[in-house]
Image 1 (cartoon, helix red, strand yellow):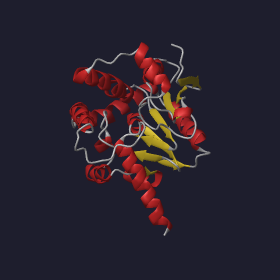
Image 2: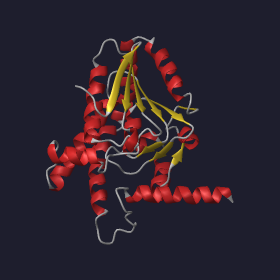
Image 3: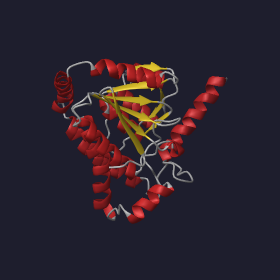
Length: 277
């Protein structure tokens, strides 16, 4: 497969997958998700790859799902027709954002995300599926009850409630304290630090790495990880449908931005103003 919305490179036993739509803050188009799935599968079964890294080109790791860029709109008109109604939405969101992400979580090799700038909603989903997360100092994470609702597995459930009830960003420092990210580095050193760590991991025995990863993931699976992801996906569909209700309590912004992203932006600006006083 030739790639349009990502780059895929392999060097020194390390695969590098890069979301490559900086013009749209790496919004996750259908094409991007399909290409990422292909790249993860390719790296997973390539005997010359021992570690897989995930980057975002430009200023941001990912601002989330593509809600209607010209490329995505045209693609859905001609190539990817979503069935009307609940069945269509369920099938689309399950395959695009749950099944694919579970496959990436369960690849047999260690995976590392390098996060800078926005890591919003769908960006969190991709980062969460990786085994290790390195964050630049300017990283900004935003969770909600999205399709692949891994958030209560990433940080403590009570803290999850505090954050998503309010609708606010988590900066890199808080993400480190909460255990969401492994390390914070400067923006300039993010690439080098990730690749240096990946090189160290790549020196280890690939079968041992696979067994260790399966053991850790198996602990979560035994606690109900997969069942929770499946049930939370249904709750996401109900929640997103509720945004269309006439008495929906949050103002819907103009354009494509989701209401809860808008609330988080407003909360962030309020915090900045408060901090300046």
